[in-house]
Length: 294
Image 1 (cartoon, rainbow, N blue to C red):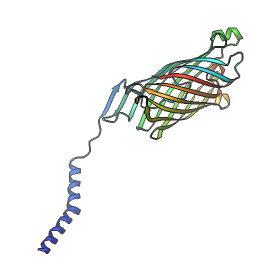
Image 2 (cartoon, one colour; image 1 turned 60 degrees about the vertical axis):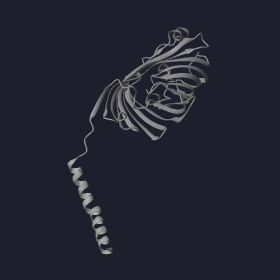
Image 3 (cartoon, rainbow, N blue to C red; image 1 turned 90 degrees about the vertical axis):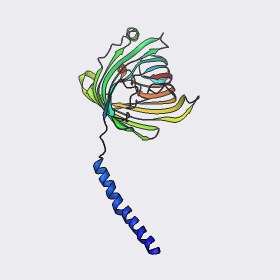
Image 4 (cartoon, rainbow, N blue to C red; image 1 turned 120 degrees about the horizontal axis):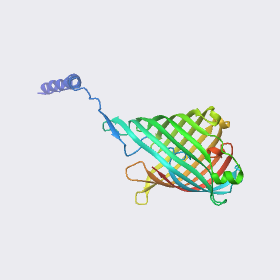
């Protein structure tokens, strides 16, 4: 009896070690994994390449009150009102079936950013207009890159020009852009971007941008808001690599299941002026603002 039990156990063991894997291999040969179907979506609900939150030249909607502790722009006051209009629009996305956060996406950005001097009867000091077309690639949901072309043109405010006699410089920047984004922690994303193109006086110059941003998963106000903090650094070859550092921190309120969101934040910045007409002048400011990422 004991010998029969031993023989049966040995046979079962042999079957498990040798015959079962062979059967599995045969099954795999008969049913090879299917390649995932590619899905194309027009005007997807969100952009899967992350926005650079603290970048003051990113197209977005914003109203800000600014207090300047230092400025090299002559005949300007210490209080300004900032107005930004614009956003990022997803046009077409191609992704593997069931994986909407991976694949390719074509997107367009466009916007306006102007500053108005409260001290000088709300005179417009200057404004910039920009637009760009990008092809975004998300290799994984947390790592991707973008390539594209963007245009930036700067203008001096009529009231400021009439009051000071300062003339508009011809500053239009056409760039080819390559950026990389990596979410290396669950709620922390870093990015780097290089732009090369025609800048001041038509010369070919480079731009480098680096940043890191944190968006908390802890929500409050009945689950509708979350904390965020972001740092952005830009430097330009055309101004001898002078830098502009911008820091933002506040609250973010997502809008539905889209990438759109309201933000209320403090912003601190120092370095090259945000306005292209004053690219040689440096400023330091503190701002309180409402932002809407569209």
